[in-house]
Amino acid sequence: MMTKRYLIAAAMAASVLALQAPAEAQSWPQRPITFIVPFPAGGGTDAFARPLAAQLDQQLGQRIVIENRGGAGGTVGASAAAKASPDGYTFFVGAAHHAIAPALYPKLDYDIKTDFIPIAVIAQPPQVIVVHPGKVQAKTVAELIEFAKKNPEKLNYASAGNGTTHHLAGELFQISTGTKLTHVPYRGAGPALQDTVAGQVDLLFDGLGSSAAQIQSGALRGLAVAAASRSDAVPDVPTAKEAGLSGYEVSTWYALWAPKNTPAEIVTRMRGEVAKALKTPAIEAAWKKSGSPIPSLSGDDFGRFVVAEIERWGKVVRDAQVKLE
Image (cartoon, rainbow, N blue to C red; front, side, top):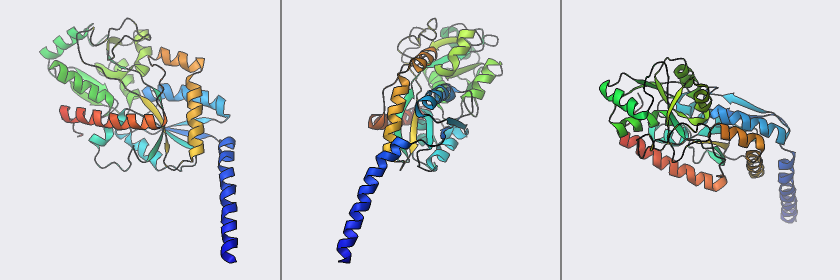
């Protein structure tokens, strides 16, 4: 008799939970949500995370709080996000850097493939080679290469940190051109861009999302967009191929994850809200200005993309013999 009563009670409890889960998703969110951005404010990740957060504010009726936690090529913030409570109130805005990290940080205390649930890619701008117009006379990639070959290691380039796409783009440039530059790592793309604009460093291999405005204003000179076609954001800047640097294509991407074990209903809801946000006129205009197309990768497709990116960047790290010092 007790067994029968127990089974009936268990079945009723399961039914209640089954009905409760969709209700939770519908009532979520009931308080502000945190987006952990693993780089300092002002970088490429911020350039896309903040407008998206503002749009999601309106759609969800709750504030999205951006929490910048920079350090170690974005791995400090990623580690914090991986350990966050999976209650649907913390999400992680990562980048292509997090597909590079496994090849450079063998002792990471998180796994981007298993400790997170992929929500969606939110932006995918190409990278661009920019120089400070007052410090670097080169107006073309060919002139930059010529000067660099005659003056090994004299030119220095900033990056968002060791092992970031900015860093590896610089390594690829050197391998492709037979030049030697001096790498100056920063704690994020924001500080790297600020010092390049200020003339503290000579050049930067940056995501177009953060450099487009500086190129448009004349604060930086764009030499080449590392993509197959020119960007509407900076139409006068040639592609790398047009500039004589064939085969040099580097894009970065930014994406949203949830900590593993976040309720499936909330994950599904957030994917839908992000897809809706990316189709709004405000986001489409902002992304176009920053040189990014509107991406469509989400869910499992995004997860498979990350796995492929880890393999791709791992090979680049090995071929370039990049090591963290």
